[in-house]
Length: 541
Ligand SMILES: Nc1nc2c(ncn2[C@@H]2O[C@H](COP(=O)(O)OP(=O)(O)OP(=O)(O)O)[C@@H](O)[C@H]2O)c(=O)[nH]1
Ligand SMILES: [Mg+2]
Image (cartoon, rainbow, N blue to C red; front, side, top):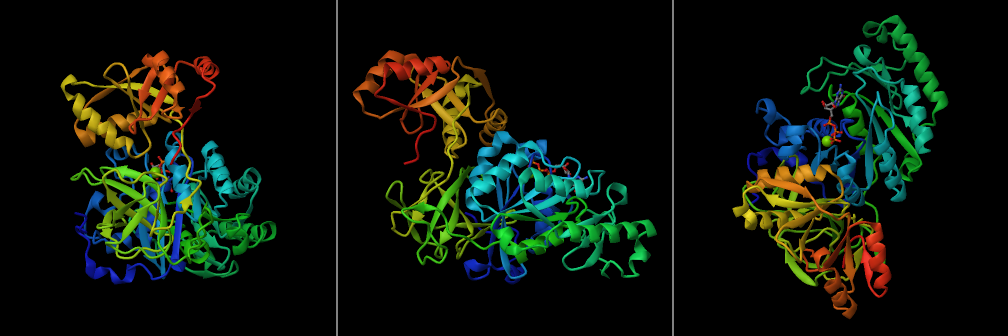
């Protein structure tokens, strides 16, 4: 079912995943919308050799690009709506990259992804500096002790001065900043970056978006060869700025970076392929290996011999030819082999891993051994959910995977009334991703969906159309909030349902949900039924 398609296996040895978890570097690329995460991801794949190894180098035009934005709505609108996972083997390491969506309407996906990584690359648009979403994401990283590298992007356009950017990063994020590379010129005058750590200069090549620029190496800021490629003013500025950087910024301290106190900073242009190679080297040299994962009763160390891991994301219909559901498992320990049976702690049931998949660029390769740090796709038919812990039989539970309350409620209606049954199937399988909540009101026949951000409604409509061939419309509902009411089976609950029948709905597990008109309405319900609990999310078992 998931046989590699056009991937040439002959080219694989150089990229076959390395043996132990120590070689894994698993990181998310995060930022405010539009800073260039997806562009950077695709260039990292290009530099890491994944595209060539995926046998695509001879392909033309579009086919040449690794596709991180693979969903139709992502390609149509040029935004990412969902996290993509890609693996590249580079310089003896296996890098697992997670390209996240920037828009806050999809931040639930991004926040969950941050539970599955050991570090992050924060992309900053040189013209915009720190933006609102940058700050929020940074807070999440800080709470989870996720070390951050910064890539200041779009140096090929006019932007703020690099010193101002460094100051802003240091001040607003309260971090030490250690520039690893330093830009020479900006916008039309952007000539390249000086490598402050290795003490040499890399010049930007011809603007050819798919070619790695030829680097001209100059040793030290006093190297006379600099004068061959830069104007006298540029050389003078470079010398002055590099001296200033060395004076003003602390040198890169890997321990401090890994402890979350210091951010190595890289400058470049993902679009022009510049600075990407240096960032890749930085990830290989400095990014941390897999770390212990918080769990109950005890955290799980990556050296633990048995397989453990948790599901941080579920994606339906990744393969347009199959109605598949892929659970993204972050491995926390052990070695996962094909055909292994794992224990789903929530249900106590076993799941057999017949077709586990690695995310190798755009192609999906059969996994034959994944270790801590790896992300494995597990095709299933709804048995796995976000937050699930998988083990070889142990009853531990990974913690910290966030739940989000649906904040926008809409009635959903098929434009063709004959297609109600189809719609139900579409809604139910998309709801399994855990992003959209689907409620069935006790009275009436329409479905109500709940989402966290308004753009998720657009995504839902686009996907129902693209993946199920159904046109749908959303209509306002007289409710403002959804609250799960429990405990199930309580005599009070039966009375509550009787009294509020028109505002009651059930979720896909049969749990009772109260659709409140407003906060006052909810408050009344709470007051009249003190024995019942009203929760924003259904607790994960
Ligand atoms: N000039 C310039 N434009 C860039 C550069 N990198 C990316 N862009 C452009 O910026 C826009 C956004 O790029 P994306 O890579 O889709 O940004 P993103 O961060 O993935 O966006 P979301 O996932 O939707 O948050 C696109 O038009 C890119 O071509 C760069 O280095 N220079
Ligand atoms: Mg993107």
